[in-house]
Image (cartoon, rainbow, N blue to C red; front, side, top):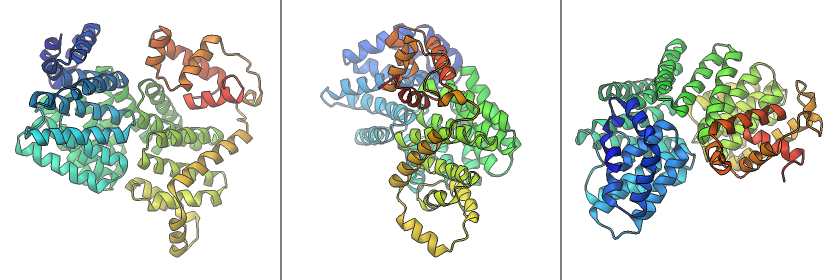
Length: 493
């Protein structure tokens, strides 16, 4: 079955959807074969199967399972005496592990394994395989974007691009262009971002790598959006969604839905924006992508603000910020702080929003769009640049984010949601069942839907059904809100 995996090279370009369908049909056998290869430390089998299997896991949004599979393979290979074949296989496994850590919001872990992968390839004086997403420097460049170090991201991205061009590694050029487009977008260099995204699209189309084409289309849409063409941006996002729908890729669909929600919001179709963000949130709950989850929550918060549902907006922003902070997503956290500042201004709490605006404006990890939004909000504060500089010298990221989370909880616990007066009561009208409480206890332990399903011997779809029942009974929209609500009711410790 490792030969079976290796034979499905169409995963890397061509009939990708059919290759994924074929592998899914044999998934139990594939899992068994991989487990055998890892437990027996069969270096050749791991080398043959690793990247194709991990790309399949990407297409299926099986991030937790994939990360676990990579971790065990890396540990198995680490125990062997170092040799060229062992080191090469380990380097390949580590670059895949880095991508999955990045997905799961484990940023420092991603950075560590990607740096080790690059060192191994460099020591061997052998390049990564000429397949998309095997170049550790391209992935490391994206890690730098997530950490907010855009200058370093561009340096590493250009280093990866130059290396791939020299060895005529067309497949890995896609990841290089994705990284450089992301960094340019964050710096506000929208024309350059658009050019990189277009180059990525062209190569992905040439190679038939439709999965990565969808990512390039998202970045092309974001650059187009930033340049003011909202209709064109929506077309790119819709094209990306259509590709991911064909793959049945939950994460890819969720990303596109977040982008489409942003377009609907800017066009003042707030109910449609809310619908799109809610759909995205439902998908993100299942797959463990913390950045996407936080983005969907902040989109719901912005939609609630526009619909003047400020209590709901506050809870969404709280959960978005907490999620982003837990995953150490500093640029996203700074963007969320600006959204919270907008909420405070709408609810006539200008004095509480000044620190948030100044922090977002002056923090080096803030994206260009975040700084523009913060600068716009400064019009509400008739203060001199000297005063702003004084505030900037005093404001601290950790202190400010901790304080604003506490304030959001205190404020919105003190103001019951008028649309749900029963939320102020201590007894639920429709009590939770024992099974629902059992699922809530597992959520509190940090388990994903798939892990809960495995623990309770249920289908994932059944776990989703129970979650929808729980959210309906508690009048909440997220796992964090659900846990907080049942704790307030003393239903969980």
